[in-house]
Image 1 (cartoon, rainbow, N blue to C red):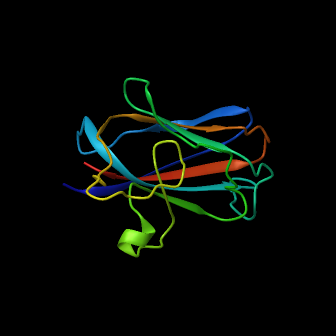
Image 2 (image 1 turned 120 degrees about the vertical axis):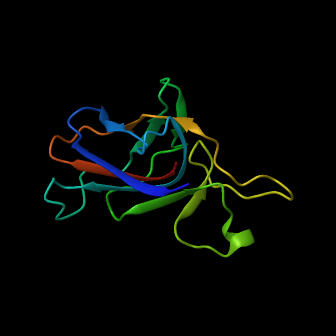
Length: 146
């Protein structure tokens, strides 16, 4: 198994913008998404914070099924946001980002609960919702295991 970083970015001219489609790579039809790294920039020059500060990320699998959608609007413009799937900072001591479930809500592991992200089918469609500033540039990196 290999871990790969897959990045897509696009100008968010529409309220719902498909940033792009990410292939998991290495001929893999299935993989696990472990981390989302995202930022909304003022432009493709990546020189400052974007205008829209209350957005959501949506991820669809190769069958068009939504497997991740932020539970609430999130500020991706002020600073880079790192979201890690299914780990608990209290249990692990890890602090590199906010640990979330498939709705983007904070997630805490219960006793003897599995902490592995479920497999998803490639390719993954990445969208941003509640956008619409024509000059904003939204960039998403998925860290995937194939």
